[in-house]
Image 1 (cartoon, rainbow, N blue to C red):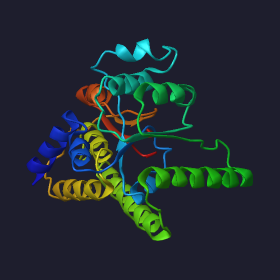
Image 2: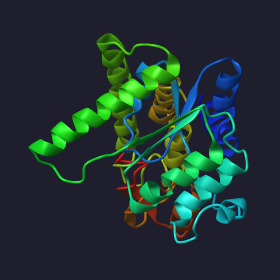
Image 3: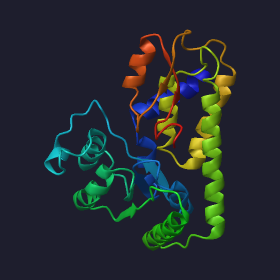
Image 4: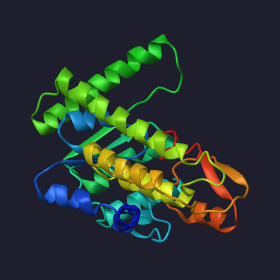
Length: 267
């Protein structure tokens, strides 16, 4: 089982988006998103598939820089470059939150350049006080209404409750995966976990949950750790969904055992 599930993860990591493309061809609406600030539960409740848009450090940013200011951060530019090159041409729409200045200031460029049927900006508050909750509640209502209009389907309280339950299960399973990093040496490497989480963000939440269950079952049967004892590193940063940086750390004899990345513990 172990070899099968990690081989499956590797295949879907290398061929990122293959499953989403299949679902689009089957008639489902795939909604892309950037940043963990996007409430995925509403996308799922609308009957759509949330799909995390990634960059690729191996792909030079070319076409994207002819359409977007280069002052924008390399991560957003890479995501945009792949999008305008057709890497994510199976998307039916895109949701961008107020995650950083690059996302906010580039939203109109995404909208104009991709011309997708559905676009929405979620304005997330940056302070925690009563007015923030009131503001964000109205933002979420507008977000929900926009998806209802796009899909032609009302999102019921039951739809939302089911989606919330499924996504909370997904987060709990992700935490369980991190538990395998507590031992010294850890029973799952940082490279392996990043691939699993990245692939999970490209699947419908039910399929992501099933994948995490498979990986958890395989890890529970693992006899030998993939890494030797060494320095235990916390990786602090934004979205790190390419494995190269983590691989450099672990190839040097250390282990990435914790993170604060937005596709990791902050997701």
